[in-house]
Image 1 (cartoon, helix red, strand yellow):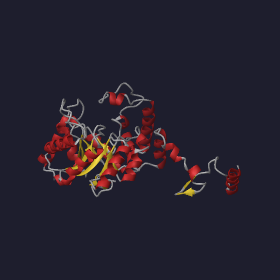
Image 2: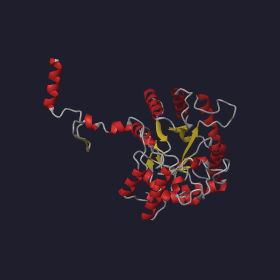
Image 3: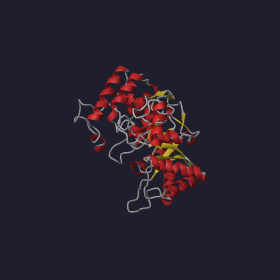
Image 4: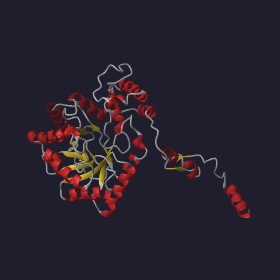
Length: 370
């Protein structure tokens, strides 16, 4: 599917491209990333190819990412309304000021005004809570966000990096009070981070949240740049983020990506992205291209069709250990379904269950007589 084959985001009518352009690396303020000129070229190419979904945050490159996007839109004469512009609040840009970050009403209102100025716009299409603030009541956060939507400064809201139980609580509160609901969830999800399949992904599907995975290539580890053969010989641009995840588990996944990419005449990065695009609930993965070449390579993943055997291989090599009660629930059919087939799924009766009705009656009679 091309980049201009749009999809609706969660339980909303908002149309977004099947890839979102992540801009965390727009600028050199963090010692890695794109120059302003390179970032502008990436933005230009993404829009030319049909992409309309751009993701940033107030905290990215110390505010430069938002500034660059705002300058680009004004200088390039890009029609503002044609873009779905998403940014985030939570990050504190003013050391020493405890109210300059987090998710309190005071912080949210100030952060929104500052982002609007940097982005040179009068509204934000999708405003993300960047992370759960455990010190602020979720009712306060949702009320403030609803006011921003009501005032026209924000069109839609979403959560990033927040536990499933807290997200569900926030959505329930919003629906109960008639406030603006969440429409999307931004979480880390890739072949090397699949634990979200235990709680977060099922929760998103149940509550109508479109999922926009960040770091779909795990800080570039799944790009094919790092292999067993060149271990220790390749420059690592993101330091400990990469080093701490280059382990045997990662190399097993990389081995399969390299092998499959050769079979389908593609690249490991495209294969990893194509796998993610096919996961239930995923709407628009965030591709954080640092160069034009990376952007072009990533976009090609939209056209890559993986064979079911390739999906099965990648699923097996990257299978995660999920928290209780995930696995327990998956096997409950053996003692809850009575040996029947339900929705195409079958389970043999549990060995502890009565073998037939007569056995159950006998046990009940015995209990009564006792």
